Image 1: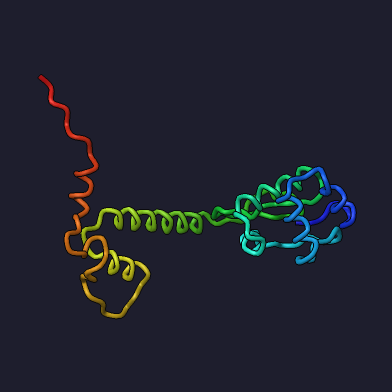
Image 2: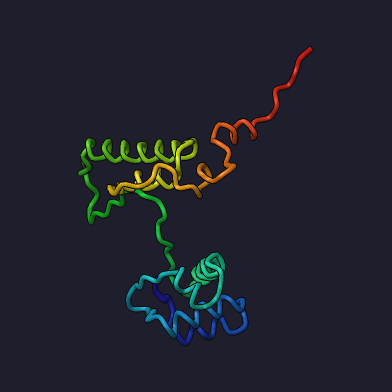
Length: 171
């Protein structure tokens, strides 16, 4: 983010026209974060929200409103995995190797299958998670306290059957 006006102009513009949260966010940025007109700064919005004692969503909405008002330039961080291409001049051919994309897609699909397997496993959840993250130490097959191991715990099949609607009888 970057200021689009001077600090004095920013303070004056939020004096009466903006919400209290927008004022609080702007004053925090001007006072505690070295936000200026000259250069862009990266701000951790989660940290800012925690510092101000506000909800993350409120801080993001306040930043978006301040941006829409022309007080600051705010570009939220991308929350998805992907490739971002930055070239000075347009390229005629992408410098992406198809085998790298295929390998990445296969890895993401494998992780999705693992998470689906976790949802339906009747084994110990703790063991499943430790194995997933590559824990090489020997651990018990049953922990005794997770949703599958605890006394009286239902198996994945029993939980699924309980959630399914009863079949309708036809005459």
